[in-house]
Amino acid sequence: MAFMKKYLLPILVLFLAYYYSTNEEFRPEMLQGKKVIVTGASKGIGREMAYHLSTMGAHVVLTARSKESLQKVVSRCLELGAASAHYIAGTMEDMTFAKQFVAEAGKLMGGLDMLILNHITNTSLTLFRDDILSVRKTMEVNFFSYVVLSVAALPMLKQSNGSIVVISSLAGKMVHPLIAPYSASKFALDGFFSTIRKEYFLSNINVSITLCVLGLIDTDAAMEAVSGIINIQASPKEECALEIIKGAALRKEEVYYDNSRWTPILLGNPGRKIMEFFTVKSYNLEKFATN
Image (tube, rainbow, N blue to C red):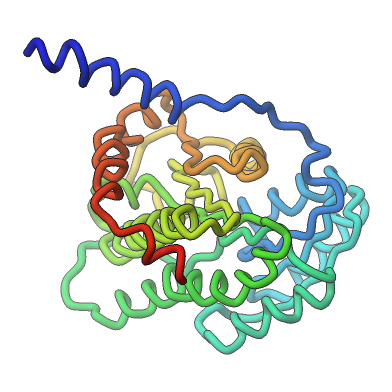
């Protein structure tokens, strides 16, 4: 007990103070002239992020399945002051399209500073029985296509010391019934991108990764999915989109956005962070220096 009071508790307090603090404040000009990809940008949070980025003077390339919706969003982005705005329609079920999309977006903007991964496949709230195909499709779109896009974007992001922004969910940090395939894909995002964030750090790759953990947001799709099933207050998509951009610009590791101020404290999991910190000490760091 004396050892804990003398050493462990002060270490814990200092660690938490460092982890949850930031010395820099967000300024809209941080995004001026930045070259940004936003997926799932035809509606909902993705569309709102595109609009915020445009008012800040960023270049944007947007993608989603609906060409008609993307045309309207791009037109509005230009009205709001985007440095440039383009769209490329397609489905993230097609991994070839995902890879080619990043290359084409890079050509349109002359590089890339930020990759915002926001798209998901349609999700219905239901008990899981035996629908293996649903699990496979959800994992491919919600998880595997994120990996494909980030791999394709990494060379450009290395050149710009850029950022990867991964839109996740509370369902990727805690158990929610009726969404097993969706939850599995969101837990996978945390495991994969948190791991490569650590690998980038140890390998001196200056590309930040921000995992955005969102509660229920008042998008049309979300409201339709939870209607008659979940009775909680949804948070506004416009404010959610802005908080994501702020966290990404400040290169935060995680952004929490929910209608409860307790969410980041309860789900931020400082115990995990402390264990990860000490676990890395057992690795031979030369392995990372040679990669």
